[in-house]
Length: 81
Image (cartoon, helix red, strand yellow):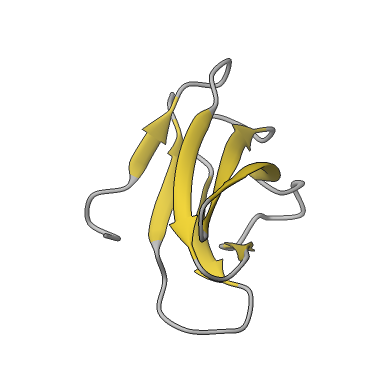
């Protein structure tokens, strides 16, 4: 949840399994900086999709991960630092 963000080291990637819909990134106020993360579709696993969440921003930046079609936030990711 928002009070327990997933912390990802700048040189690491985090793989998440999402059932059903595609996911998208909603970045908070970035102050003109580029997005904090890149989402890369890894592979299908039955009715789920594995995604890599790859830090591309600055340490401390965070973003919410949401279903593409709208809906509740799935989790928040933050770059360690």
